[in-house]
Figure 1: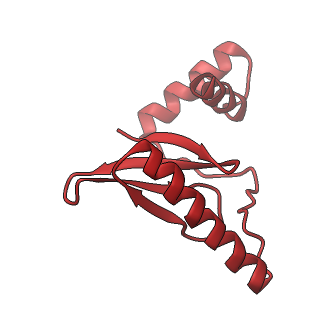
Figure 2 (figure 1 turned 180 degrees about the vertical axis):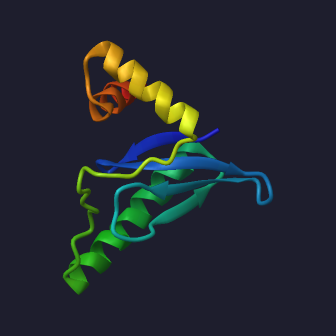
Length: 110
């Protein structure tokens, strides 16, 4: 199970690594890897802040935008029967497939 925590205004996915007995955090939405390890929530916060600071400093030094920007478009591959069912649901609701996916994601995020 993955969890998300916010550190310095950025979200990070947290996973437990049973092989090393520690939690691993990885920041989302950055233009590069910024990960960190700790054995407690307090440690994750501290290590995450340090990792983020190093990453941001490196980006500033190299003139790189640290934040990844998204186009708003992505391709979803579905089995044919799932695609057909999604098209039926969208038509029944009087919306496009795009709107159906947007609405579904808004409910998950909610």
